[in-house]
Length: 254
Image 1 (cartoon, one colour):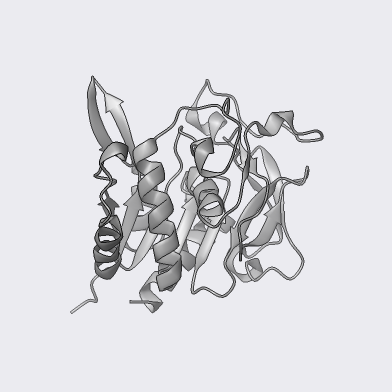
Image 2 (cartoon, rainbow, N blue to C red):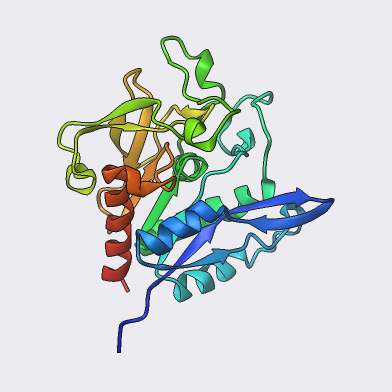
């Protein structure tokens, strides 16, 4: 009998659609976990509204951690609210307070328990904020930075097409994960990492110095990337390898 696939909890968004709130995870993330990480995706719901968070949320998170084998924190059009990282009051939205409260607490708990986790785009920024880091509210306002957001109109292959290269830092343990020290990535973000969170190691940079990947080196697998490896990973060997490495870590940690 074939071994069952491990469970990976997908952390998504709470959005209003047709005047009703919906919990949502993009299909491309689900497909990437199922097809390239070889894991079974399930949705981790930020079920409590921000003004109704009970003190026993830690117990709810512990229950979730006990029942899954890994976590995947997706990207999103929303940004982490600046109140969580001492950012400026005029930092741009949109915001998702329910996800903020749920995801930041979950990240800290999952990291403490050594659960394999992959953090994408907004998830990458959440990872940094959860561990005490800060963000650039508007990356374009930082002197010397290039544009990091592809055109918002046109075919998806244009929006998610390669925009710039990233280069791994010297001695990065992710050399073996990506199989290359320099490769092209897509880019769809307006904010970026500023102060790096405690215990995080910078693993890759864009040509303008923007941080593109971080990891917790004393962890079975806790890796964050600013780009979107889940978009057509079959067309990018480094992205496919990242997803496969995540899946391997999840299976090893069962």
